[in-house]
Length: 102
Image (cartoon, rainbow, N blue to C red; front, side, top):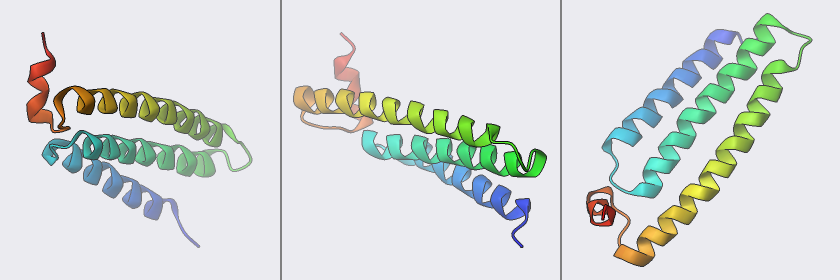
């Protein structure tokens, strides 16, 4: 039987890997992937705590579905912004984004 501790450990690992990737990467796409990893850690927590607190309820799963839908919309917008950045600068590294200020 898999207990909630395993899900929480996995979620914490995913969160810290996402934070590490967000702070160390210089590529905008890698930063976006790190943010998505952190959002998936939160979704895993929603599902795990729903199973623990309300075994017959579906609230955690609905929150996870809404979070996945929001993150999909956020990803689509972020990729569109990244495409426009690449068209203007011909580079997608964070250090070169100061050229777009004014």
